[in-house]
Image (cartoon, rainbow, N blue to C red; front, side, top):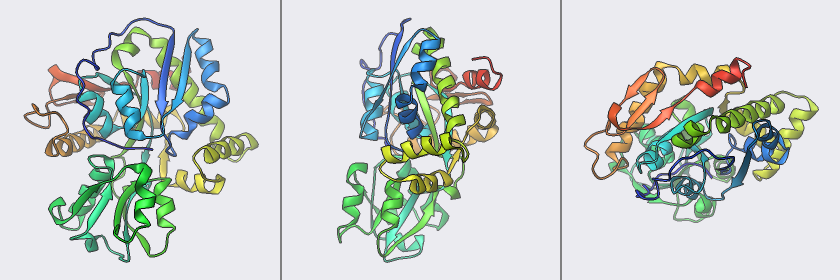
Length: 347
């Protein structure tokens, strides 16, 4: 599922030439905020919007979150679901100019730190902590440690695949993990487990997005229009208590390995942007600039911006409220224009 970062060093792979075309593909991995893509594909909503613009869009599930972003970065997909941090540290840092097309939500408790046989974050000192190294889980750990006067030097980070996280926690040797839903909920339900810190304590910093190749989008704006149109139709369908909404969320729940109650519980700790207006508020805000500067600083401190990066501003990040970093080396962009079209009823 979600969140990664082991930096993919691909230069030639990143240089896929963009061109006008009529067939596209996006990939996604299991996470509460990305399950709508599975439903939208199965329910024919994505096809409906693709047909409207005379194109084809294939929606592909990748079981491993890290692998999904690596494949996007290598040019095997035109778009991929990922977080703001991972978009910066994988494709952008690898030279793949990428655009945040849809801001779907931000984690508001869906990412957390869990300790075994302890009930305070301060108790993590001296422990080994299993997480997807250099991911947003790692970022959450750093932010949490700072809140109790600790640093990463006070723990031992153990890189663990998201696919292995639950099994690892069941062993006696693993006493601390950082992960995301649905893994977080599964581990939380185990005996002697306490969630001691979560993303609701850093609201708006872990943003879940659909990221697309910037050149591909520029050459094929109908690709962006179809994706955004489909997304907000899915959002409209799944929201509320109508029979259609319950059916849609139930399908998402089953596809993610839980039931409706479990999926709704995950949604409760997710700040979903069901309307384009909600997403636009964040996309256009000064807060986004502050968030991305924090993310860039963390990424630089952990060597995630490339071996030649001299500082946190090495990679330019273009946002409506301003550009962070090198304006001559922009590789990551937040483009709200397609969401604005949805808000204006112009799709």
